[in-house]
Length: 148
Length: 133
Image 1 (cartoon, rainbow over the protein chains, first blue to last red):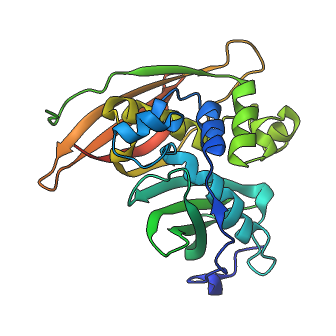
Image 2: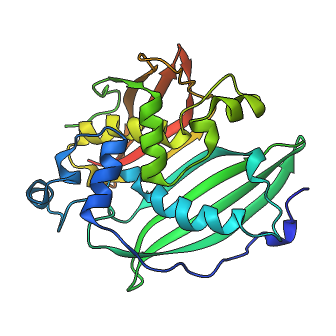
């Protein structure tokens, strides 16, 4: 079933608050095998001017997967077939790094839907803001749903 | 002093099945094509493949190791053009990462072009980092 093109511009309700903790950052840094001290050691992060440990750039995927992707794959009206979906591209624009102590909320939007050569393409955007409304990062993914 | 044409120190990393299981748990991406040969085969893949975002994470490390402070990364993007196939053995898959400063801009940022190769072929397309220099 093709994606419903009327979903272009659709926004999903803002997520709950995600409390970024030092241990989750450390777990993610360990999982990508990155020994960077600023992901683990508060003093190392402070020496570079950060208020607390910072997260690796792609840590944002924890929020993207949990809220943005979850919103579209569980939306029956959109008609996205998860089993046929692959990740086409990913981009991040950072105002600043995610850091321990952040309270973040994710606002999810469908920016584009198009069909080409029997495949559907969807651009999914996640605006990730602090609880106070400060933009921390914008993440965009192209999702490709391969034709049957 | 960073100038156009500078090469970043290269990085070669092995990706093993256990790394993918650990990444799945930490990132909350539990798609079975990244840990289950049966499911990978059913969707037409030659075997379990690494998460595109795992490859993008280690390619990001090429840049952040060079920067010193990962907080100087302002934009990061990549296309996933070929899979990294991760065999069920102790060797895993070798991913080779290189990067070059493409240009340094008036606004105090620079563009870094990243190349990620597996088995001699590029796996990330248009892998670009914009950094504060």
